[in-house]
Image 1 (cartoon, rainbow, N blue to C red):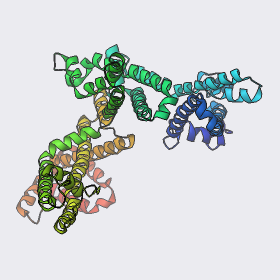
Image 2 (cartoon, rainbow, N blue to C red):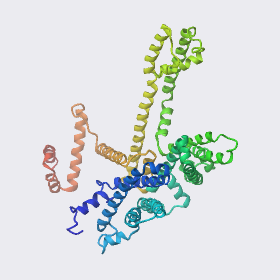
Image 3 (cartoon, helix red, strand yellow):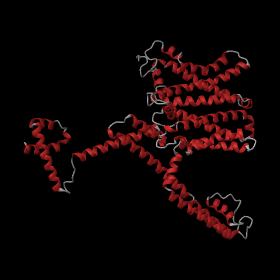
Image 4 (cartoon, helix red, strand yellow):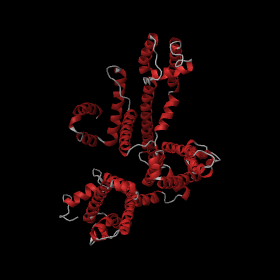
Length: 532
């Protein structure tokens, strides 16, 4: 690197802080994620512009967003070209900026902003303007800057594996899935969220009339993606370690809760297409909200909650039993006190249970309320009790949930310590640790912190084992006889060392010990005189 563009030059600083993935303190990841989100937002804006009812009402806002987006993309393009000579692929080569400007990524960046500037510099008709707007969808190709390196990484990590094993690594965290698995997960989560949003907004008649075609297209694409995912997961089920000991591996996956959720996510579309003449379409559309359950695959929260309920079910059952007992007693007393005054509202005990629950929950809708003095007194007492009684299960779950997270992290740290026992991490151990970290959805910083803690604890344990292996350390005041016997044993060992190494060599080695151990040297000198 030349002196002009040394580490302190402005261009070098821009590249280091904005684009260098090797610089850990920089903003490379932030820049990449921000650009990706802006690309997705700009694509949505382009699609919404094709709806005249929306575009004409918010034309100025669309134009402002387009100007800001193009400005950011242009600044990114200019900075990448200006710092191209610092890029590892072009450093040291002739005409590095020109080489970069003709590269695939640079051409994609240029295509993303070219329609905007072309429309400003050249007089175009309405049809050409519409084409230029649609061409802005080419901004999606900017995502290739993240996808292509992730694809190459995935190919390297799975070079010697079968197609089925590669597909399983793409769908599930395996330790050799790489970033491409995370991108696929985010892509599926995006389509789940989009399809759910469409179901919600489709219930609004004005929005449904405006985007009826778009909603149908989105639902069709979501159905296709979820169907392909379901088929792929069934096909790759034999690669799942959980099914290795089973004969019918695919059938075991089909019966699993996650597979049933995946199937329910695609059934409404099929039923709507086949049985629309016999079933209420509104019911089928709302039934598509079951796709929300697909999100449970991409978070460990429900798994943790399931472990909490399994571990604390007795305590939770006891608190629920107390609540139900209190509800029934309160409803019975409310019926006895208010039935004569309000026979239409406190007609029977089941109807009074409704009042008891909303009173204990401190909601109090007001549609049913006592009017007798004793009934109102009961309401006050029940409301005060409800503040505490309904908080017990929530507190138990929150405490147990936090404790379970701690247990999971401690288990992960113990797995790390077991991996450190042989002094190094082999490839299989690394894959297992990465897969476990992905399963627990631990961030990179959390994994690093737990790894450092495990390494420190393992080093401390090794040092302690080494100390105990070299000899038992005794309290001389508490056990003087044993301490004297141990000291005699050390003297005998020193005598053997002297005979083996020689007096001169031993004295020379002792004088090389740092001076902070002078007290120990004095004791050794006395022992050495007697030994020699």
